[in-house]
Length: 101
Image 1 (cartoon, rainbow, N blue to C red):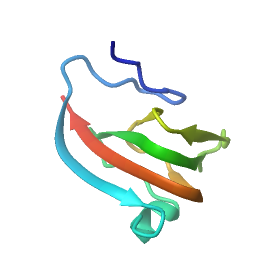
Image 2 (image 1 turned 90 degrees about the vertical axis):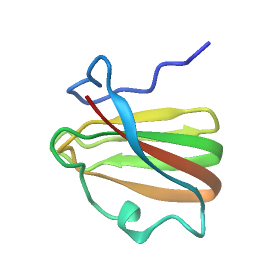
Image 3 (image 1 turned 60 degrees about the horizontal axis):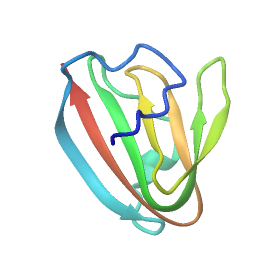
């Protein structure tokens, strides 16, 4: 059974979208610095951030703001153009798939 990703911002992942690039796994000490500061995805690209061990805090840096503690087994859907960043919470392993229609 596949668990749907956490989706807090739109637009949703288009039907038929496929991963075109994957990065990671990254541990707490190897997460690229760019992921720890405000950034966004290019138009037409969605991200699927998967936590394979531990936990990490995901922050939305848009007008609505907010955040969520992601734990082992969670996957966050990140739509294009929505600024965000990660904050380490201790031991963690993450992977990111970049998807497009």
